[in-house]
Length: 142
Image (cartoon, rainbow, N blue to C red; front, side):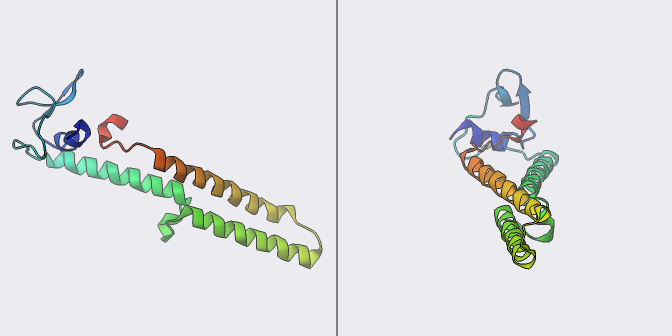
């Protein structure tokens, strides 16, 4: 068992303490956790558990809003699909304008350019997300 797994238990335990050199330690042993699958002395700190769950939910919601440009509130959860559809609609509007008026309007090109930029940013965001190391210790990020 690794330290990151053990910390998931310890940060929600009433018997946790913080040592500036070692991080989260057990108040019973004054050492970092050494259990294998679960701690026999674990006593859940309900307030801390609730706070951690809220922080995880906030982070998840923030990431989802970032990936969908706020469209997640409307049930649209795939930002790449949203930006791709936007690009297609903008492109069709440009083609329609070209055939109707014989010229391309710069005002209609702007949404196409913005959607293309959004598509590229989201593609980079998704590719970087797969490379990101998951940190189970939410306290490290504060």
